[in-house]
Image 1 (cartoon, rainbow, N blue to C red):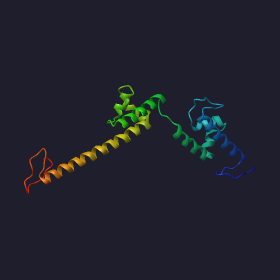
Image 2 (image 1 turned 90 degrees about the vertical axis):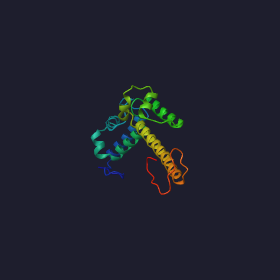
Image 3 (image 1 turned 135 degrees about the vertical axis):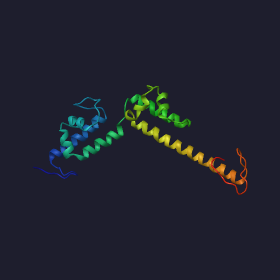
Image 4 (image 1 turned 180 degrees about the horizontal axis):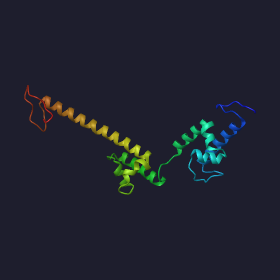
Length: 180
């Protein structure tokens, strides 16, 4: 048996050849130019194994770097759900953020003219868009809380200085309460 240097503990000619075929198969699947499986096939271990002509169990057992590459490519190229709807959702989220409007998942779904109950399912079907919406909502809440805090501190200062706007001034030695 001929052995060559490699990064894996499996360095036989067969392992080196199988690794190369798997990486080539990943490239073809990503570029939609496959030889054996359908061009519209999704990138996963089974399809890479079929396209490379190896057993998928062999990939799991002996080719961890191929598994890492599959996972990396999946995260880079994956579009969740329907591609057109995903693109519409992303565009609507970006437009609403730019306009400064308050964003909710329901509002985004309504803008895209999705089914009325679909805002409940968007979490599973379009997790990337859902996470983007949640990030924007968190930022908007932080801005609102910051504005409320500034207004509250301003009201306290006005009450302390005796220049209150909506209430009677607090007499010297009086108590300050949240109601005032």
